[in-house]
Length: 263
Image 1 (cartoon, one colour):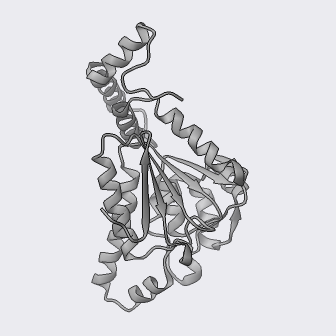
Image 2 (tube, one colour):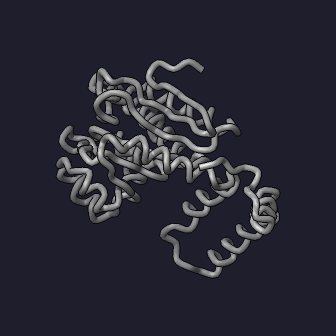
Image 3 (tube, helix red, strand yellow):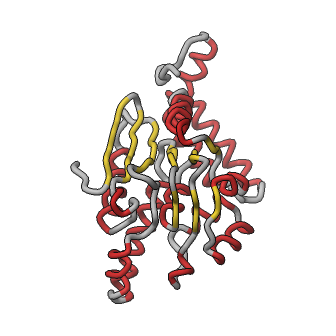
């Protein structure tokens, strides 16, 4: 598929999705939302792709919503606005529920919807000079569609501050509150993302998918008998799977499993 607002690069078991609207700081419009949604679905179905990196061309990662797109949305009816908002919400959820590991490569700045993209990824690595901002309230709107992911990433207490003040904060602060897991110098960003990619390719693709579903299912739940039984059933299913049997067999035979790529 040919894309207008994103660029796809694949190789060595990895797909890099580049946001490619540098002239508007990679801001969202309806075309980018639709293309990202389509790309996530395409990558889900591609067995050759084992991990996905979300990156951006230009000086910043993503400045949020495109001004012209927001102006257009402001002139539409409630029903039309709801349709547009659902497209954005569905795109973020498609990224969040992708069965393959996802890494956000963050640089420059990430505002509003850009923070939603980062939070919907499994791993976020940021350049130490990146600025962050949940800027919606300064425009008289709310960070609704991004909130489930950003709240989970930074925590409720930090969200109260940064959702309400809409102040810019540093990469060091993003790391302190847990929004990103790692900070590197700008010149080290690609090398660090590449190293994480190498680790991801050591894991079984079925195990990755099952682990992501496990995290979503268990996080923030009380450890009830139902949860205990559910986790036991999950590991039993993996042990009985072809991938699980191959992994255990390869460990006992002191060899690499069939899916493994060299670091």
